[in-house]
Length: 165
Image (cartoon, rainbow, N blue to C red; front, side, top):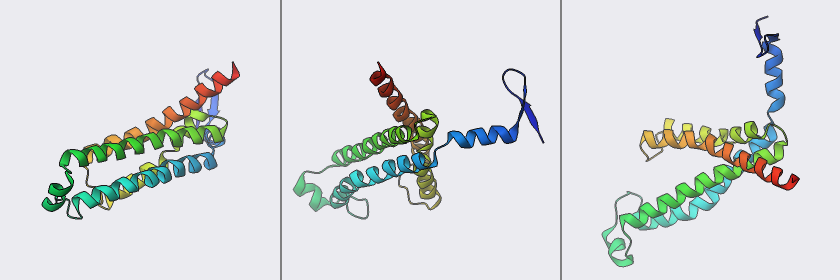
């Protein structure tokens, strides 16, 4: 058996360390937080996507008739995309908050891990070639999801501290 030393120099079994980590993770809270993140992002983002699709069309090229008649422009579509991004980021914070609140222990860890479903969905999207965003944008958004889950968990901890005083 491999052993490592803890911060005080005592030997520590890696099996024991692995068991401690597994006890810190709340699978239920991570799944619920992840479903809140993805479900709300889809539920709030789909109406915006449908509106954008009605203005742009399935080809991604602006229909001159639609642009001329409704006053829509590429700037309006950019605003819609920014709204979708904002909704997705806010839902990641909410997913982390929900996961931390349900976990009732190791809130920061569980809140951060709530983004795992979002990251998995993003990896699938990239590997399937379904994303229209540049790869760099996708990587930045993948990095943002766990960070925002952490922020949501931190918000829960701050709210809990405020209630206690």
